[in-house]
Amino acid sequence: MKSNIYNKEIDDWNVSWESAEEYRLCCKQEHSSNDETALVVLFNPGSLSGSGDNLRKDTTLRILREIFVNTGYNPYIINLYTYATAKPWMLFDSWEKKDCPEYSFDELKPSDFSAVMYVYGAYELEKGYEQDIKDRINAIKEPTIIQYL
Image (cartoon, rainbow, N blue to C red; front, side, top):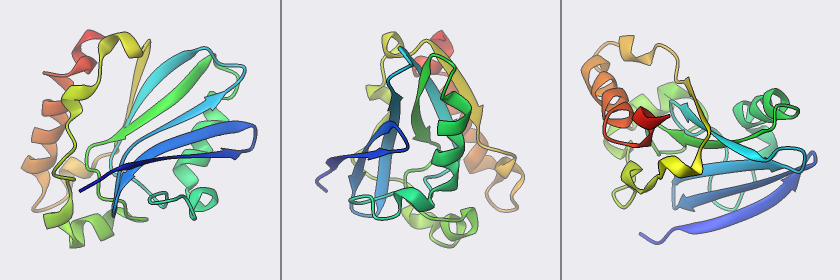
């Protein structure tokens, strides 16, 4: 599965993301007033995927732009799961598609980030998915860059 990198300007931000078919692998939002990069770990991608037709509809990315605008940090967003759905229940309904087979969190480097923020809610309490979600959280925190921040 080939991935593509896209880029759009929105509200004085440069938003770039990598997508592969129905997956969003990562997203970086950059504002000219910010110099540092913060890793933001979310649950699953929202409306933004593909070439970005739904960029303005992605509420989470808009809120992150509002939060980070005067902080000195640009948010670099990864998700526990890469399948792009507008609502978490849509991810649960398509659980077999939750991960892009070609994507690995191991490619992230500690030197690329100065801070980390976990914002994935309490979905590890979702019946039938609890252990899988807890395992993913631990897999991201332990062997990857996040343990070093």
